[in-house]
Length: 109
Image (cartoon, rainbow, N blue to C red; front, side, top):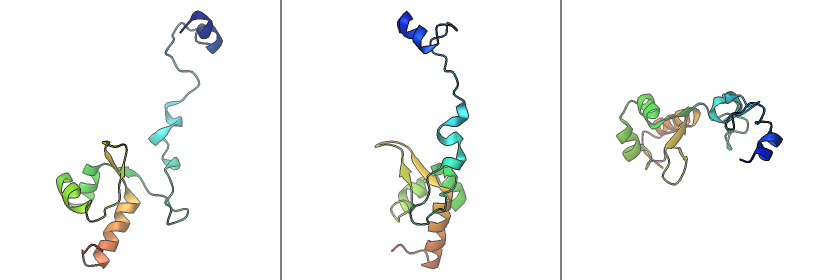
């Protein structure tokens, strides 16, 4: 960054070129739980808290391997954060899926 650019940005007065100003760490991303995406099918119903595959395994009562190998092929809802990214689950979706599976007697569609 040139001296002119630093002066225009306001960073020159502090001497720290990488310091962010006026941004709180809670203003973006998953630090704001009230900004989770809304469920499409339920109107204004929220998806719930995001869960890791370990959290889902703990909730269901099995291992992460079982979640990946058995429940994902049966339709357990998840979001992949990238082409090879980690799996993200949402609590309310998982609970609805479990309840639907129990009503069907544990059988998939």
